Length: 236
Image (cartoon, rainbow, N blue to C red; front, side, top):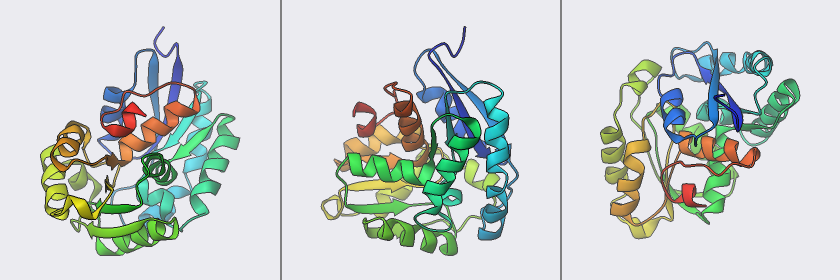
């Protein structure tokens, strides 16, 4: 029976075309992925704020599939209102589905902390408004954001059309001096990154954390399963 080790419930924006594919690559044998979607077309503050209202309903529907853990897979959607909102979101989803829950923003924080990364470079596909919120969130959580570079994209389908090669080049352009940072964080669950992570780590000589990688790693830890995500955190 598929999912005999665990069933992972996934809450994603409706326009996300990346999370399910990357989670499907990263889950170990015996783990199945089951998805519920929240309406979102453009990655803007207003749409993200509206989308968050549907998260609890998604968790309730996922509970019908007897999932063992729920992952809220949206980076800016889970940090939009700063520290504290992410914790409340996890608690609400967990209470609704009656299983552990993780939210991407906190999963990223946990991954960076597990790697002892304090000074970070951040690359995103986002607009300046969302980048400012993300930088504030990370600084409030104790990280030194040495560099942040975005792409200014609003349409989520356009973000999903970016390739791992795009991610690789953006990271290399944002980190000219690897000695200046402890790790790189590639933000956005709709940004395809899994094929680029290990090449980036090899070429830069430092850990690379991405939104999907950290969320999946964190969700599997909650049900006692070691993840097979690429990169340094996958070996943790």
